[in-house]
Image (cartoon, rainbow, N blue to C red; front, side):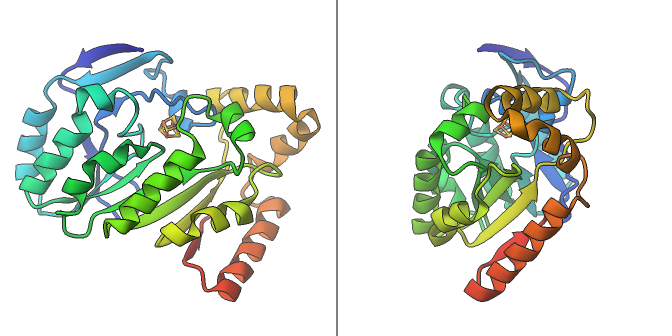
Amino acid sequence: MQINYCSGRQAIQPCNLGMYSYQIDPYIGCEHHCYYCYVLNQPEIKEGEILIHKDLMEQLSKALSKLESQTIYMGMNTDPYQPSEEIYKQTRQVLEILLNRGFSVCILTKSDLVVRDIDILSNMVDSSAGISIAFQDEHTRQLFETKAPSNERRIEALKKLKEAGIQTYTLVCPVMPFITDVESLIDMVEPYSDTIWLYALNMKEKEDKNWQNIREILDSNYPEMTEQYRKIAFSKEHPYWKELREKLNKLKLKRGLNLRVEL
Ligand code: SF4
């Protein structure tokens, strides 16, 4: 992995998730390089390269001094706990400054490295941490997320976060038609998740890198599905999603689950 430094690039940005106004990306690029990730479509994201903010603490210090205390989202365009974090500790430094300034975080990751920072998260008012997961078995997971930690490690991290009293959530994303067994995943994470969010695979353009990747994986491993994916993955109105939404909303009521069905 090639690590390069960048300066003058804003680490704190407006967040388009309704619940949070700002997000922080401690890295640019993501070593996990999940093949379905929309971030791969950004031209500056190159496989094998991660950018680190040279002036991260300085710029955060200035930016935070102009904001009211609030919860900041981390995990939108990069995994804050990708392997480089063990060495560079950008995320830990961000958490330290947020805690010292009275801010809190909502973190999303695929890595069990998040448990390292339980000491900081548990001292923030209203912090939460979640894992994302999309495949119920390791063979399939490795096809689409070759470089990310195993499900077992993710779920163990979720358990530790919950035991530490931190609000937890799971993001089942992307739900891959006919491949993701949503109910199995819910059963796996439900004991350790205060909330479970579900998001569909949602492709934008046929030329996008993430769609090209998915298509290649399907062609090699599930050739009978490629044509169906061409229709389902590009339309949230496809009957596949409608039926799954109905099924999950019934399951939510029947089992009293805290599911947020955003398919
Ligand atoms: S871990 Fe998240 S940000 Fe990183 S490549 Fe995978 S989906 Fe994208």
